[in-house]
Length: 244
Image (cartoon, rainbow, N blue to C red; front, side, top):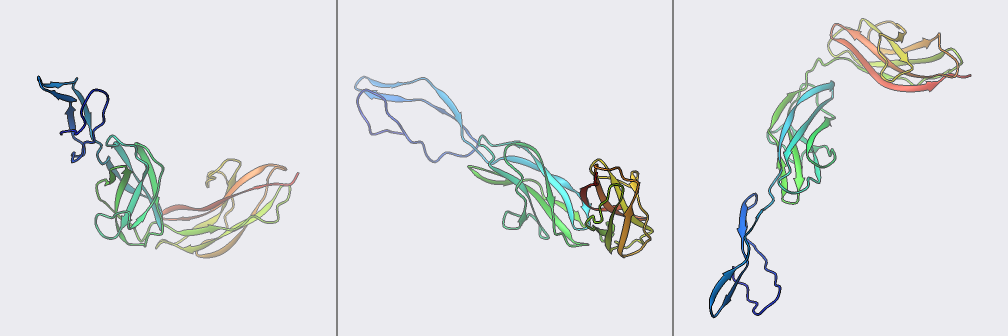
């Protein structure tokens, strides 16, 4: 490249038309009546799109799943946004459903929501840097029509020193007969049927659970559950504190 400036002193030059992700070697030069002289050689590499892979989908519940990605190279520019995008058509883009899961390189996890039961989805991780948006490999995830029951935990009421009332609503059995249902509780998050529990019938619909044997002035975590041949499914979790 020829710079139009002349004389002694510092000067600047704009280098254009470069290819992304390419290593270049550069030297300053000066032309006098005696010939052309060159400065010390330096090297630089232009930035490029990030490189990443997509994590296969895994079940969360009937309408959601987890995926994510691994950004192994940021292309020489900071990754400012990352996540996954999904669609029922191959090679989804940011114009489709997407998550935003932080920034930077490395492994990240995402959650797909509002999926259709029985639907086949294409998932791709994405990463955005100053060069543009790059995508991971396209993976396919099928939402099984029999992922399990759909259950909601009711609010906790009638809280006393040693007892409280809760319950739940079983909306869908997921194709498997509900053999047992109730609520479970513990002083730690995510209680299971291995902790304290009630058993309140079977099948679909609303049920009421009476929790007894509680300790005064203690915070408990509770959630509903259903049991079928498909396994045990839990509803959302609530916490409450018993009276002194």
